Image: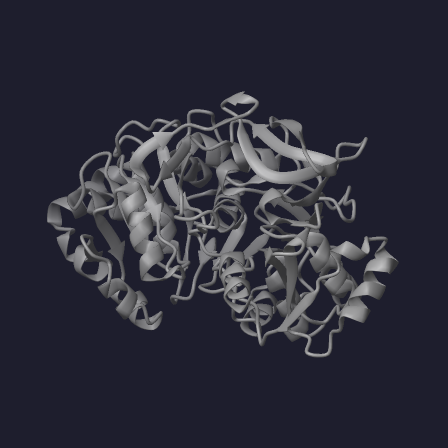
Length: 514
């Protein structure tokens, strides 16, 4: 479906030539009307030309936009014109966006006045110092008669000649980590990495023009970008882009109304959708995939019992563009995250104090070009791990069974050392879910003079007791040391824009309360 020489723009053009220029209803968003492949190519050409008027070749340009077709075309058009789009996380607050701009040396940010108003981002945007904000509403006035003639008489007919020659190794986008280790890092993903990951996924899954994907996951995260946008674009599946995954009642209604067949999401969001949906809302779905966080057994069971749908669990990381492994409908091993995708090499390195599995290191064509770090803004740091150059250390402890299925033991940074024993905080959360399936739970650790560290469980279940947790741990075969000593009841857990629990904020809450 793609060529190893493709860029995102040439892959879009290739899809248009394969599936047709006039494909009404190919893409939809919250604006009236729909887009065909021809419309998407036209929009990418026009927006790319406009961005070229306000930036230099090779410049890193921030994009502060919602999940809309125009946002995707802005990203593709900018990269086609040798600009590097940097997707800003508008849920990260002013400091998070400022840190991202500093890390990637972003001087110009393209946004929309209407979006800033609707998303109530005025205060945050006002704090973006030393950054020039350009609104699309104003930029469109720069598209003059000569530009229109170029577009209509030349670019639309010879799109790949109308932009500079593409380089698959050039940066296609910069995405930013959540900053769980301090300042956020800029993950530089090439055209090659993104499209290689698309092909790796499509080698195992059969999607096509008969499918319709609903994507509410933010495009500023790799799961939302690759799974929710680029895979449908390449394979001809129709796509509905929605602006927020947090609208738990609206999304099930949209799935029913739009007759969507594919839903990519996170376990946290899937749990909420299932609890707000009627039985008929998900009748059209044939494939539901969960990533970005562990799929809890109660969520899996809820979808199976209420809707007859087996949720497919996968695993990935932004640095791998992002998918590394997943189960398939024909081979779905419960509790695992599936087998590694074709073309990915792996090594498991032993971790002192952890008896099962090892730290996962990977290498493949879908791997990032490298990091930008806050301390060295704009300087590319190529991937390297203990295995060698070109390898990436995921930081996740994984186990692999004889059939090649991976299971997540835990994030290495999410282990607590309690009385000399390494305890996975994900195991603690498993225990909590077994004791209280309806509530949401998250565990962190704080310093403890007597035991080294103490585990704190945050829960929305006001009736949960330590005795219930101890009984659940015994039933699951987990040691008593994994039962948290402190239980903190909260109205809701803090979440990142991707749907993951915000463990940085959670840890800060635990430290302040200690």
